[in-house]
Image (cartoon, rainbow, N blue to C red; front, side, top):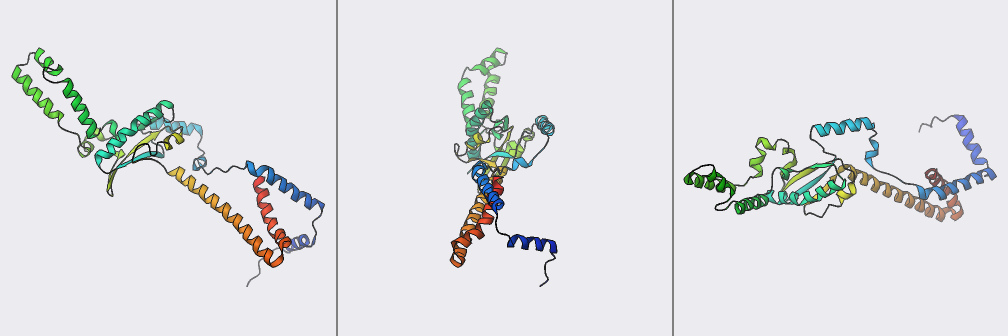
Length: 284
């Protein structure tokens, strides 16, 4: 095989170091490295947050937020995903989530959010509203009284009341509403049927307390926070812990194998050098 192209000066320097015994200066350096590792390693803190990779100027971030406000698009990379077995199930779960988000908005954890049920209530809510209107507008109710006072005949008033009550029995369905112009600014929140389930999303704006949003997971069935950046950051942290564990196991395995062949003293000298260098580097 072809020999590596290494400068003779480097080779002579390495050989000179190998022949030289460790003197007092070398021992002092190693002691200093150990002290640095012992003192500073406990203070070491590793942050795997991918948000730190975005170093945009504050002025640019303010301009982006201003554009989002003007376009009524406050969406962040995190959002709430709502799933259910049916369209009605999804809408009811989103309605149950909204009071929790209203509370977080009041507390300042989020600045705003966009939910489909603000414009498209569930069938259950529509029925409750219709029942309330029927209870307020029964025989001789407010609407009938106003029409009578305006001079309409009894026959006309009766026909109008029949039309109103018939209309209250109708319910707005997702398909009907999504195909209307009124759904233009909400259509992206409806994911529809995915496999055997239905889903919607609630977009979030101005997130100041991500932990409070994570705490919502499990409070409403079928509702969870989707945070892809946070998931990747957690994956990196998991890889980091695995790497540290592998390095430690590797040092111990090499120490064990070398000790069986060369004895503990020689094995410690071989393994101690890279281990001490790694610890001192992190300590620095």
